[in-house]
Image 1 (cartoon, rainbow, N blue to C red):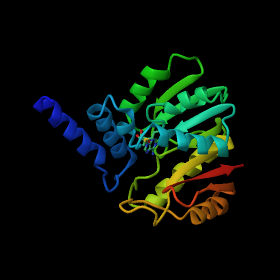
Image 2 (image 1 turned 60 degrees about the vertical axis):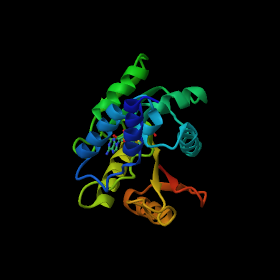
Image 3 (image 1 turned 90 degrees about the vertical axis):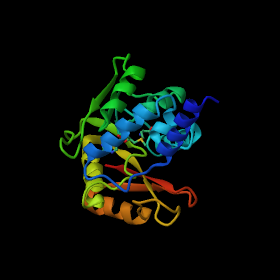
Image 4 (image 1 turned 45 degrees about the horizontal axis):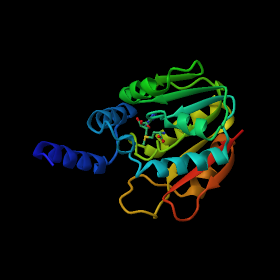
Length: 224
Ligand SMILES: C[S@@+](CC[C@H](N)C(=O)[O-])C[C@H]1O[C@@H](n2cnc3c(N)ncnc32)[C@H](O)[C@@H]1O
């Protein structure tokens, strides 16, 4: 291998492994993912921090099993928009799809890939600064988005994102998070039952947990 190509490959591997301890605000999180899009282009899974396509598909399958898409779909933290390809592949039908992300480069890349269809749209937006209007969607997905602590009170920031998305979706939402005590090195984890109870108490949601007891990622569905 040529020396320059080998250095580039090593740098990519380092960048892939680099995980910040958190972000002061969603804008900083967007800047981190902007940089990943630039530096790791050509390998979508590296950009998105998935171990591989199968891991991403497994998460999409678990989420859509819990809450099948219906009507207007919100994909908050849509990244490169891969959920669209998954829904198409599995013939899971919906009226419209709207992807939102705090990284403008993710939105540019997702738009290049998927925005040729009338019912697909993307938006660069921070829902903490600019919340979504109530009942503007039907089903919502927040997948592999809430894993980094944001702000001085990460739990508060995460609950604000969940609350706004839940109020924006008439049927409900599914989000994923990281289980406490299951994998070393994770910086922002929660106990599934505790977070579910909080969503039930504070948002009045009907909750359902998907936790297989092994995977460090779990999902919660919130229904109205
Ligand atoms: C690991 S990627 C996952 C992308 C996609 N959901 C998927 O599973 O392929 C996380 C994405 O969430 C976005 N993100 C993180 N925090 C966000 C927030 N508060 N609002 C919107 N997007 C956010 C990041 O910019 C990044 O594109």
